[in-house]
Image 1: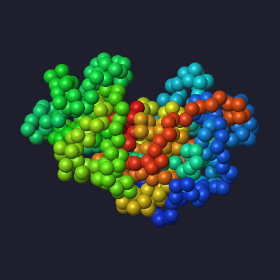
Image 2 (image 1 turned 45 degrees about the vertical axis):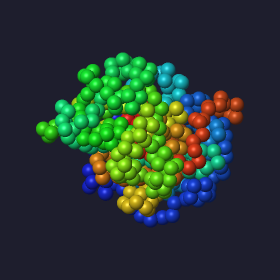
Image 3 (image 1 turned 90 degrees about the vertical axis):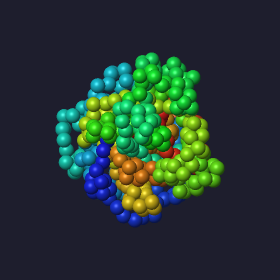
Image 4 (image 1 turned 180 degrees about the horizontal axis):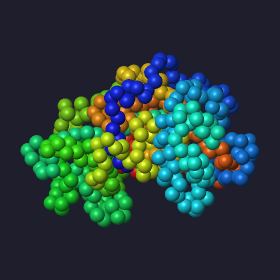
Length: 445
């Protein structure tokens, strides 16, 4: 987790194609392509996929995913595929290849999709930078598209995350009184160990770590601090004009509590109206109740200072810089970092209504504890308040198409079962804590 990515308003307006269309309702049959749908035992990229040495066999056998809805497609069945700027996705893919090519032989053997990506990355490294048409051909030549969905459903579910920005001070003042903490050293060494598991949010906010030299800086109010933790990274502009880039480094190991879902369940905010802006507005109007609600979320995030400059992008869980609108967070138990994912959805980007056509190829480079399931993803939007307002209202269903390396084949029905994550509630609520790893300390790791 660690966003520091910035997205200029001009770039944002330019990169998103707009247009109106009626998105498929959840569970509808209006999907990409019409290939027969079936729930089968998984053996695709999710760790226990069986590989063969023959490309022909890989083309003949569709990936099989246990208890997941899958459709094998062709690229000409992906609406908008030829219109996307594949050079942008390819550039993000090359970033992932840096990490993939540093992987060990054991990693490639243990996760066949990783091995398949390794081979593709070697070809990408040899090819170097490509223009949009050559990049499209590269993806088509090296991958096969497979649409995924949860059992009984026909679409994936998407949210958005971003990097927060706020003002702060290196010393506590009357204006800046809420600390952002570095992680206790033992917690970092053990990666979310139980060293501080006995300290929850309430105890820490009431001073359990005060005076231990862990304060990195102080910000104006607890709401800013809370949202920085949820998103996993922040930019803090100090009084002297300097910019601090802080990223997630560890947490107290306690479970994240979705404050947005709490507000919906109590009828305070309607499910369809839920967004991070709505949560913030309610917290600002109800400070005492807001404190009690925040403290229901016992998870607490610690930060580390980075050397990233203002123009540099944040770093995702894969260890590579994220790219706004080209990077996304996925379930790391099921997906391999570096996997290209095609998203076809209608999102509330240009307005609060989901009317912006979003047909783009993104690369899995991040993760988060709230990102669970084969067709669940969190789109990285960039940095800043305006960007955060957009990212915070994304909670839409759409087509989730995984690009599987063509050299990856599958076993028969006797392939080992891969357990799915615990079932999620039917009605997913977009919550302020739905960010992703890199840009989100959401404790989602």
